[in-house]
Length: 403
Ligand code: SF4
Image 1 (spheres, rainbow, N blue to C red):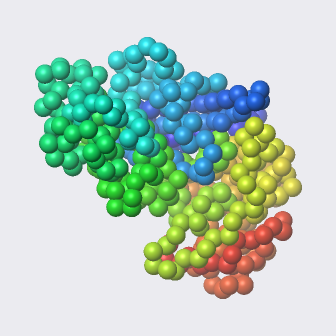
Image 2 (cartoon, helix red, strand yellow):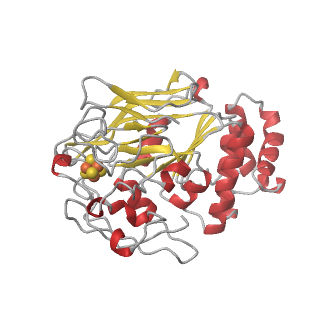
């Protein structure tokens, strides 16, 4: 996955992360707008994202941040107001009343509610055989292929003779996945595919999707608000806030040392089964209305470490080695006052490397150690509870040791 966004703050400099040389799906400067009560709402704003074959890319963020809009734009279900989407090098045109072009049949979507995505009047075998036809197979081969695919997703061959309502939620999602596989996809967009399922079915479907990616060489964009699942299955993760990607990188790195304050808040909110976790403090306020997003950094009304300039300075992704973050405090633009090479270097800035660490105890003063709330090596509660330079309600003291 590559996530990159042009940075209008600089003199035409374009920052981007290194990524796959040959992505199967690529979004470039994508924007989506809706009209609401005569008002223009930009639900997606200048997003670049790529997915390679055999790669699982997790897309996370709060409800209403634009995750599902991005997923629908990726398959052409909603038109772009700006930017492009390409699949295997071919542009993805918005879907109309006509049949989708054959060259785009390898781009398939798995929906949140499998029951709504399956025709209740048709038998499961027929539904999957339709996908075989779409993938270029014959009708006579459809039945045999349907049985094969049902067994591939862990269902018995007899399921082909049943109707969707005869199956549980997890089984229906398996049927929906089998139908998408019938079209021989090279990229799947899964929009909250497990959120409507019970816990055991969630794990089974997540494992099934991951196995398909590895064994079939399919690219997968997994949209989910369940960070614990994304953490387990995604190779890379992109964090969205109010229509923009604010952080991206390899999943393990983002989880162990998030750069963006919003990512920190999301990671802190993941419950822990061992009981060592604590309740995270709420972010102040609600997610702003995308019809009138805040000026400057869109996260600044809720950011615990916001500075005065955050309200006026536009934030775009800046690379930190193999990662990227949109925060001029944590990821200052090269040549600016906050850049370590510049005049006003900020000690709390993480190192610009793929293994960036937020520990920084050797350089950070007690007045700037707010991120130590999630540092496994934070030495004391007093150190962890130090306030940010701009006094905002801090997160509750927490030492997530062992995370
Ligand atoms: S730019 Fe400012 S408001 Fe935005 S995340 Fe960084 S510190 Fe917070």
